[in-house]
Length: 205
Image (cartoon, rainbow, N blue to C red; front, side, top):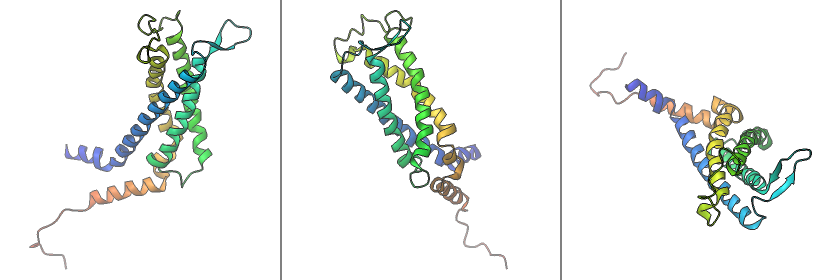
């Protein structure tokens, strides 16, 4: 049991720190996403109005798709900057575009999935449509777009986390990042320091 505790909380303690930091950043990103969504909804056209008709189809892009995408872009940049400076501390060791390009690509992939889910939640003929008698847009808490966006965030954030973990910051997590590698080595060295011994023991000659 002690060996398991040592393995989980001492040897890999820095990974728990990274996970905690990543969670804090992700939580702040959710708030940023929702705040931007609210501001856009209140200042722009009605979220259910048509933004663009898709040529040669009966489908269209509505303003809630636009609002969701803009909110994603702002929150994605917010999350990246904080992860780069606070979570992984890679700002001094890797180029901004070198890390942001895959981070944005991962976010866009998750966002495309999210837009599909958003459409299903918002479209009145969808089997996943949020009930209009409950979400009748009569108040902020009963606005269908807000709840649909929150559900999309809850689904896409874990997808982004996993993909970023295995790709965007893979070099950082693999120990190639100097500051984190040094932290991990320091923790392991501290764990190997023997405890105090009895003063009566003799030293080898």
